[in-house]
Structure formats: structure tokens, C-alpha cells
Length: 421
Image (cartoon, rainbow, N blue to C red; front, side, top):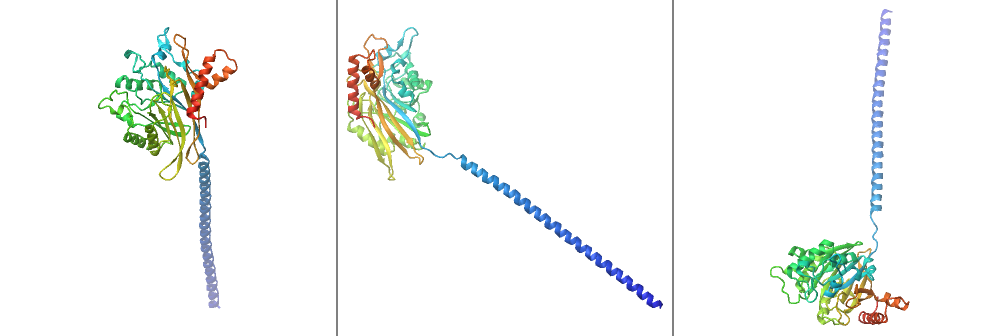
């Protein structure tokens, strides 16, 4: 019986130990399961957090892209209205008339009052300055060697002129010093210029202007300097008409990627109403080498104008414009047709595809009116159409003689240029 009780006791102890072992195993398994759950939960949390951050980042990136797309401007057509005037000259009668003896100065502004709106309302105005500003100490002179009171530079600027060509047969009238002084005076008043230079570096620096998003490059050349020699070692001071120089200057202009290359050409025969063959050949040469607009001067009278379609080397076509001579704008000349002139108007458009078109070209007929010697404010540039209309309305101050003069001038102008386009 004693053995039986011991055996029972061992059996119970064994069961108890087994139960404890099973319990410990279950606890360990539970702990492992809890660790796995925690790990899986942590992984899920991290994954969800990463997805959240990634989504927000993509959302911001998408919004940024949308903002960038929205910020990019949509290309639209842009246009520039250009006014072009002819030779700005100053004979002795002109500056004598402009003299203010009370202040010992000069003022030419009254000459332009009738036509100033056409200049000031343009986006860009170009003219040909055919005189020098060599300084008072040199002495003011008219033809044949011009030196004009420098106040004219300010008056031209105030009128609204933006760019002047300075390469012409009178550029060296007061020699190299006068040429340099002229450029200095233009710089003082803020008038841009091209055609004459103070250094080789200046000659190689092409004048450009960005107007309403259209980039213009300006060049200027002259046939000569009235026999006055270009100073040795300073050949850079003036652009003479030479095909190699012209090609070089055009090449320098093209390197600046302009939309329009505009060239002033001082050429032709004085007082002839039609261009010569040299002008025609040079015009073809300029267009073939990439010029868009050619503005002629020197004859002091008007010569024909035309719009061309130019075929480029790659077969594409573009617009070109040419006027062989703009005539005089301001002068004291009395030779036939030298008082009949125009304000040329061009409309240039740059399209969304970056192509350039010359949409229209027309002109305002004007007349350099001379009231006669001894008259106060003797000279005035008249709007011909406005003067004719005023006469027909019976406005005072427009005589029969003046009416007949401007009517004849208009007929001559329309005959040479062929009307508006």
C-alpha cells in the first residue's frame, strides 16, 4: 500500500510538471505571436505612412507642374508700328530762323508741331541725320559743310525719333573731330545712332532694339564723304558701301538673332525721282544676304518703294520692304521736289510661330513750308492732307498759293510712290 501511494504521488507530480511545461510552451507561443503581430502592425504602419508621404509628394509635384504649365505664357502675335523720316538737314536759313536772341540759344521744335503726332504715336521712329554737331566754337554753317546747333539733337529726340543713321556724304564735313562730337551730342540726349563710330569696337557692336517683343538690328552705309578723306588708321569711323564690309556687318547682326534687320543706304543720284541700276543691284544684294528693310537716302527727293517676297536658301519665303529714297524731312532747299516728302509708316508683326510679316506700308504726305525771308518762324513741316482739308473748310491762314503748292506736292508724291498699301 505504501508503494501504491508513492506511485500515485509521482504520477501527480509528473502531471503537474507536464501541465506547467504545456503552459510555458503556450506562453512562449503567445509571446511569439504577439511579436509577429507587433512586427506586422509596424510594417503596415510604416507602409501606410510611406504611401501617405508619397501621395502628398506626388500631389505637390503635380500641382507644381500644373503651376509651371500655367505660368508658361502662350505665344501671341505682337506688332510694331514704325515711322520713318527722310533727311534731317539744317541749312543756314534753318538755324538762323531757329535762333532765340533773348536766350542766345536755338529751338527748332516749332518746325514739327503740325506732324509731331505721327512720330510720337509710333512704337519706333527712324531718321537720317545729314549734318554734324561739331560745336559752337567751330562755327555753325550750312551747305556745303554742315555744322548745326546741337539743340537740334534734343529737339529731334523730343519729337520722338529713336534711331538716326549717321553714315552719309556729310559725316566728315568737320572732319574726324566733328564726327566724334556729333556722336557725343547724340549720346547726351539719348538718341541711338548707327553708321559712324569712335572706335573699331563701336563699329563691330551692332545697334539693336527690342520693341514690343520684336528685336531689330540697325545698320547704315554711305557711298562716300564728298571727297573728304577718311582718316588713315581710323577707317572704322564710317561704314562705306563695300560688299565685304556689308556682309561682315550683316553677319555680326545675324549673330545677335534679330527678328528684323533694317539697313539705311545713302546712295543714288541727287534730285532724280527714280533709282539707278547701282541702287537696284545693291538692294538685291542686301535682300539676298538677309536684310528685311532697306531705307534709302541722299537724292533729297522721293523715289519708289516696294514690298517684296524673298525666297531664302532653305526655300522658305519672307517679306521684305524697300524705299529707294525718302527725300528730305527738314531742310532749307528750294530745288524742285525737295520740299515734297513723307512720313513712311510700316506695320511689322511677329507671329506665334516666330515668323515676321510686313502687314502694311503707307505714308503721310508732308511739305516743308517756307514762308519766306524775314518771316517769324519761317519754316514749318505741314501735314498735306490736313492742310488741304483745312483750306476747303475755309480755315484762316491757308492761302490759295499754299493750297496750290501742297496740292501739287501731293500729286507728285502719289505719282512717285503710287498710293498707300
